[in-house]
Image (cartoon, rainbow, N blue to C red; front, side, top):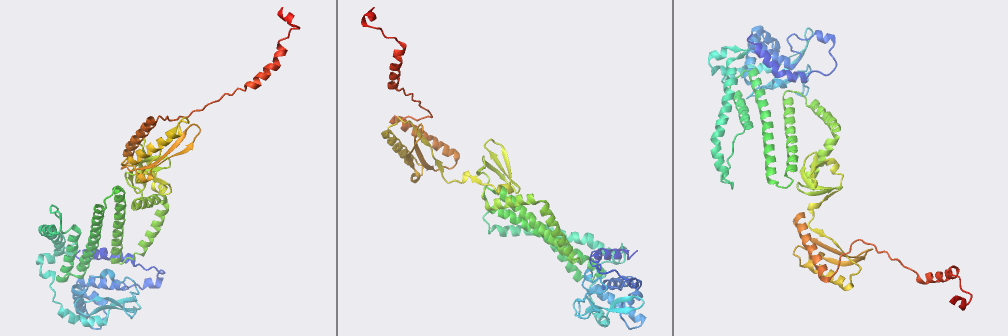
Length: 547
């Protein structure tokens, strides 16, 4: 039971890369399966792990079968023990990078029958494996003769402090799930203690950093909440683990576990720190970029920040897969296919989002602008990533998708720098020419004397003799801050025009129609003369007429 935990630990550390490196070629033939090595020496990883497990059990007789040794059984067993000590103390913890393919890695060395496991720390000794072909077990990998010849000298130089020399024997000799008790102490006591020390360091640095920043900032009432954020503390913990791995003589399996843990902590802390920096950048840009379109800009900034955060997480995930020996090609291919599927399914939504981003970034329309969209006039209430909301004059809310809005003609009323004053004065046809001249001159003087009128734009002319009126055209631009001020100025000008008309005695015309009835009297008299003899008989003579 003592070594069950070690087997489980190795399985947890290496199963991921084992799955990733499963052979993808043709299935093995029955003869190859029949000659499979019972000690697992068919691959470089199997040889290294099998040797470590056998030597860790103090079974040097079995461990000796992983060596290409020419000495006797006892000398080979002793050499296996020395090799185990050297590997345990000074081989870099990169077991997950060892090839799990029967052919090894052809690019590791020039010779295809050799595989480089690693280099012993502090020396130039390269731990290599040799490939042999045996009839009983087929193709196997063994520790090379060149490596074994240099092991005794390296073993004599190995004086690194071991964890067994630091902790009491009760923690060294007692095991839990096959793991020494002192390693459990380091997990549940050492790591929390290191993190607590980083929090204490943060408290100690707060006053110093706050005083330093206040000397270079205008506002002295702002103090940093923390100097060492949680991601930086985790990076300090990971660096402490790696330093302890160099100073303490832990076993290779333990160093592999702690090295993997430190790598995972480093990746997660780096991604976390990148996300925090990205969020701080968003807040800084939002504070520096003040505009009426703050809500729309905030939406775009939030979308960009979250997209960048997803990129950070995805890159961290790829680095983690790479650490475990998993090729990220499948993940990238899946991402591409998934992106195409999402783009096709959400085509309209993406169109609206892209339209919203372009609308917000160009700042063509801002919150508070008065728009005329088609036949609808209203005020922009909110600009989102998907749609824009317009409050109409009827106080209803009009929601228009950004994709549709991009294809429409927008009239931004609030963007005009001047207001157009363009009334038409209709005078009756009874108005004399002198009155019209007085009218145009008086209105022109009224406009040029007003302080809110652009004098260069004033034009008052008699321009049309309409069906029922004489039309005087008034043209001028009014300086006003908004529509309400323009209405007040327009009202004053109209009152002035009415006063001028009353002063000169002119009257305004209204739509009317005059009907003329013409009677031809000469024609009627001739007709009466022709009809009179026929209707009134004449007397024969004057006497009879007198009678």
